[in-house]
Length: 211
Image (cartoon, rainbow, N blue to C red; front, side):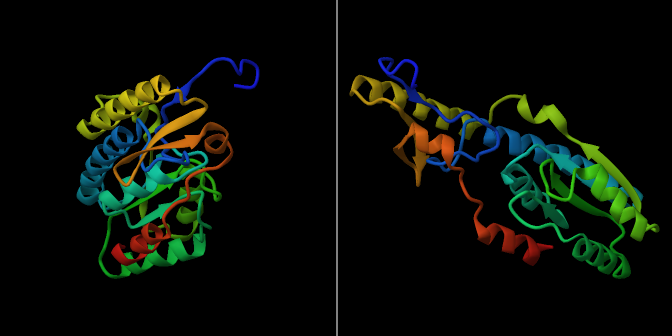
């Protein structure tokens, strides 16, 4: 952009992390969270059948949007994300309470960038205190970056692509196309790079209520 200011461009937000400012949803996010949800649903079946505690790590080095959405959708007992402080002691107490109340299987979804470490490290800390649990770790990894795009993903991407082309024809440049409240918006490109979308605090509170 700075090296070739004569080149006109309009960007489209392509990242599964959904952390770009200027759009409610990025291209790739909906497919990633549905992929993660389907995988966690299957792991939940195993956890229930064999009375296990699973720590499931999803992508999200700097942002926990995938973990938050997939965790809520699958009824995770806890969701650990980079945006919030991870209270290991509180997590252990919650899991212990579940055990004492005959809840012998649980799911904890961990974003890879969580401050307490990845799923393996956190599982080790919990295992040291809750030896009666059979604890397993599953890293979903790069399957979240592939697969068939969801219907909403394809619709949103098509809307953004058309809007970007129309913006260029209209003479706009150095902006990113986004969809906010179902409306096409334009955000200065430098702002999208410097700032990140903030996680909705209501979602964090909802996890505590649902779990």
